[in-house]
Length: 238
Image (cartoon, rainbow, N blue to C red; front, side, top):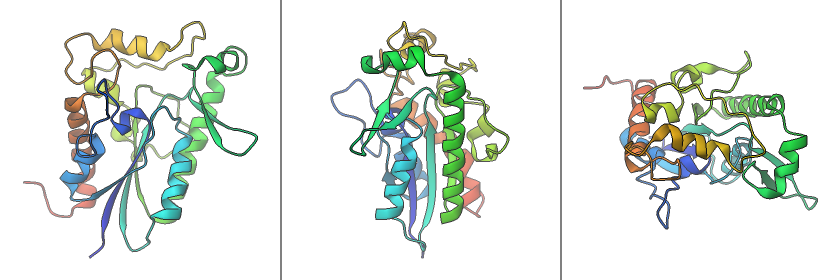
């Protein structure tokens, strides 16, 4: 019998960061709950404060150190904000570029545009889809809190609800249609906007940091389970 693995890629939402001293356990984050529901083993490659492009690097690590062609894999890719970028230092190590970091303020004021973010995000997703097809991996994608413009070449059937509902709206309970534009005068506009939309009574989020609570992770896991189950289990649900 083939061993079955669920691969988790993404940023702090995928990793389970919260307002506690330590992140959630692997059984508490949505990918861990989903793996249990599906009967898969979890391999977690999520990293907090990373860009979508970083998932390519993590995917390459998975292929190099874990991949076995005789095993069965489902990969869940969490699509974070498109303004998060990646660059490389002179010594060759990658570095994350984000609007909430003071050292990159000039970059976002003078160089970054939404067109650049859109271009880099689409090329990243196309790369992930091509790599997963090459290795026979069942790839799935979930949008975080934006609705980025996708190129026609991107296979939206691999996205939760074809990319028409993101995780933030799933937890808020309404479609807000947020497509973030970076405002360099605000240190981190996304968090402020999120907190305004969440309010103080939504138990799907942790207090004051815009990340899913344990209940929020459960809600995402349930939504993903109903989406994925029939594609990997021939027996009907009861």
